[in-house]
Image (cartoon, rainbow, N blue to C red; front, side, top):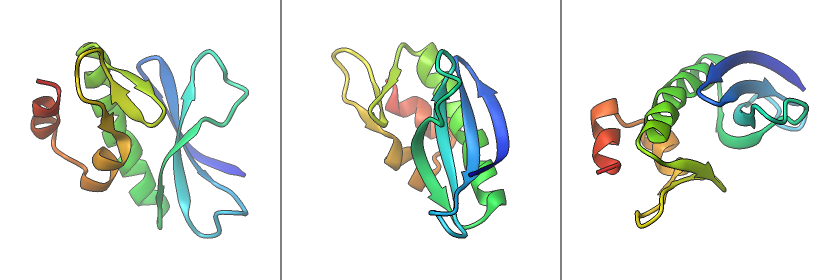
Length: 106
């Protein structure tokens, strides 16, 4: 596995990595700051390194906003008591704008 990009994000770190198993794809993972020895949970796979880095940066903005609104990340979704969970796949596939994402947290 080769890590191509790291970005500190709120209380975690996002990694763009490429493994032999993934072939030519690049994976974005989220790693808990309290467990720096792990390689994190997969949140998306992309064809190019550039695309993966763009999605990692975008996800970081959205993750920070989610945390500020009281959501936490659990099992590949943003969750908050008495609110509908927001799956990460929706965010990573659609790449909503910050304004669109704010509406999800209302």
